[in-house]
View 1 (tube, rainbow, N blue to C red):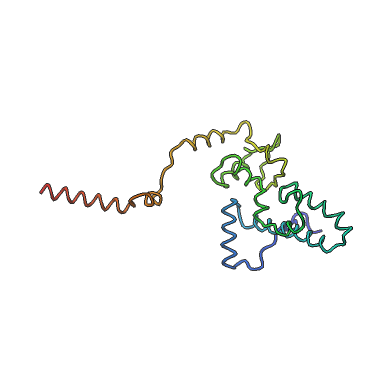
View 2 (view 1 turned 90 degrees about the vertical axis):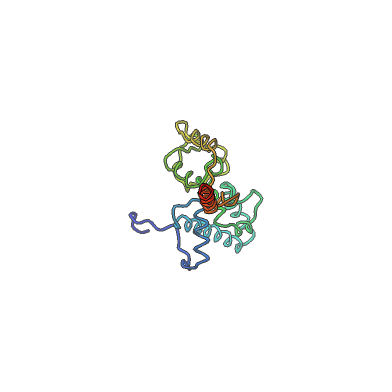
Length: 205
């Protein structure tokens, strides 16, 4: 059972944590879903491994036992939107960590409430600006069920919707990279300005 002060870890590190391709893939996933650290990604991998283990165990059982236990697993996964209602155990084995991360409240808020980045959505959730129905949920990793998708909204006292509307109305400021793609680069503009100044001084003389 263990000491209650030190609960059992719910995640496992990858077998090759220093693999370059694995590290790049992890960093990309962390940025895409706005995760706080690799630990949250490892939790998703561990949870997905547990679900896959259940599916493989059911495939090894007899037909009668499988018909009895398989609907329980499929119903629980369909409830949180990981599989469709008519999915099979093969669909469960084909699930990826991204499928599980896309059901997080943080990801749902980013898509449905118009945040620019998942990190903005995470901050809004943590500070209590997001509600699911009549409940205020401040856990970014909360798994949203299919029934809860359409009842995610801002809390009545939140001012974030007005801030987001103002941000949409503000003009987009182009960066130096975007300017270089459209026309001259800042370096070319400075060179042209210096050339014009030299031409003016020579004409004055």
